[in-house]
Each structure stands twice: as structure tokens, then as C-alpha cells.
View 1 (cartoon, helix red, strand yellow):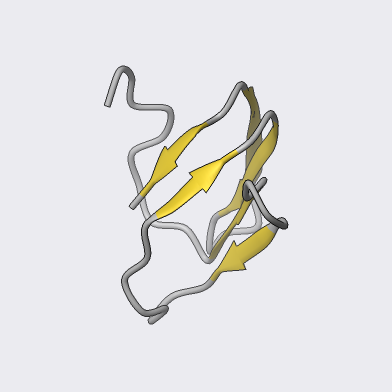
View 2: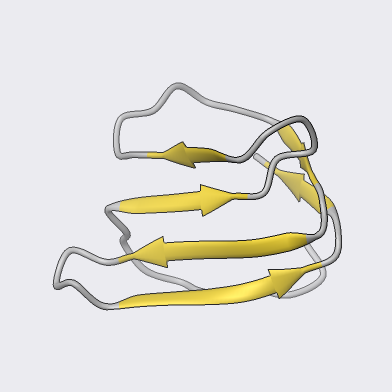
Length: 60
């Protein structure tokens, strides 16, 4: 990766997938997907959330 955006435990992450947006929850099967321009959002167990706007990429 070029940069670590967040390092910690999350309860969900929302990705702008290249074909459609998707959400990953704890226990999700391993996944590799291309991403498109959009907003990547995450939520932590204590209710905090964050986001970053991205310009395409890859998640695994």
C-alpha cells in the first residue's frame, strides 16, 4: 500500500467498488476488489467513524 489510512478495529467498512458499492463486516470472507473514485467510510465499535475520499485503488 502507498499509505495506511487507519490502523485499528472496525465494525464495518464501506467501499466504492468498481462495479457497485459494498460493505464489509467482521467475519466477512476474504475479498479482493478494485475500487473506483468515491468515499471509503469506516465505523469503530465505540461508534466513531471516519472517511477518506479516494481515487480508485484495490482492497484486499
